[in-house]
Amino acid sequence: MEMIDLRSDTVTLPSPQMREAIYHAELGDDVFGDDPTVNRFERSAAERMGKEAALLVVSGTMGNLVSILTHCGRGAEVILGDRCHTHLYEAGGISALGGIHPRTVPNQPDGTLRLEDIEAAIRPDNVHFPRTRLVCLENTHNRCDGAALTAEYTARVVDLAHRRGFAVHLDGARIFNAAVALGVDVRELARGVDSLSFCLSKGLAAPVGSVVCGSKSFIAEARRTRKMLGGGMRQAGVLAAAGIVALETMIDRIREDHENAARLAEGIARIGGLSIDLARVQTNIVYFDVTAQRLKAEELVQRLGARGVRILSTGPARLRAVTHYGITAGDIDQTISVLTEVMNA
Ligand code: TLP
Image 1 (cartoon, rainbow, N blue to C red):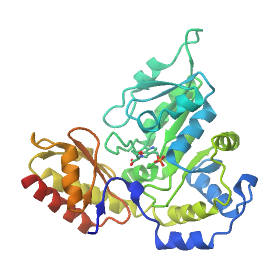
Image 2: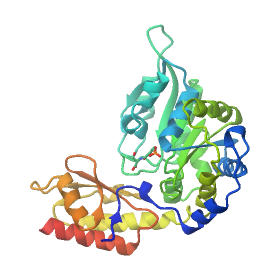
Image 3: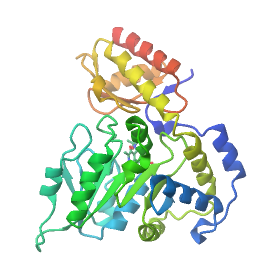
Image 4: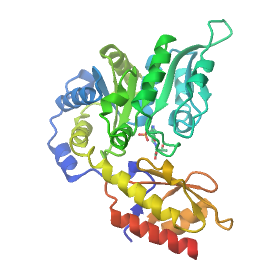
């Protein structure tokens, strides 16, 4: 049975053009700075984000960890959303490996942190307190329905942080989804932030890799942090080659993923026993709930799986489906009909 895998956009397989580029990549030892493909990729990634420099890392988790460790010393405090990926799903790495104290403030349903909440979380200068060094944003916001944060909002947070003497890191794992949804250049969404990480292996469909972007001096320091974490890679041009193709060919097509997500959401809205807030589906992430008392989310996942559709349960009654490269409108129609069949059984 051919599976329709909507568990995440991380399941994407590299395009034929990526495989070709990997095969032909010119390579060297990147820890010595000698891999020409990595160097070319990092220059173009930085340029695309409007930053001075970039650093290839293995994953989104490592991108956030390297960035936060580079901004903060041990005992520093970072302000972040209570539903952000770094806080929920990165194994507590900033505390475990960096001795960094997380200070959560509530994520609003649209993925933002209220400026008043950030302001109230800033520590006064007093021996009792850790020092506030950083605030983290996430765009698009995974747990907040894939919401896209606007450039105007980000600018307000940057302004507040810089006025109060600390930095901003943006987890832009899916920042190109935000740029496409908002119809803006991705540079607008990256403007002013001191660092950002974005993923090659999600909506952009490359097999492995994320990128940290920032100033030249920040990236030089981040390179040292990456080495400390064991993330210095040698002939990493095999990854960067796919990254180059990802940046060249995979951004514009994201629109299709958003159309498929909207199509799926509209289908779900028509099925009894499921509920969805259509207005919240802005990008490629579709969260919905089972309202039928007899069925748990996990059971629904099992039944769909048996019929060739894979999605994730993210709570007792909550589910997530993510559209991506390789998923067609036909796959979405098939998913809707399987969901309808299972719910009516
Ligand atoms: N998210 C994954 C899972 O870990 C939940 C997914 O399937 O959505 N930032 C954000 C906003 C993310 O959504 C993810 C991955 C990461 C960082 C981490 O990236 P990786 O998996 O490359 O370490």
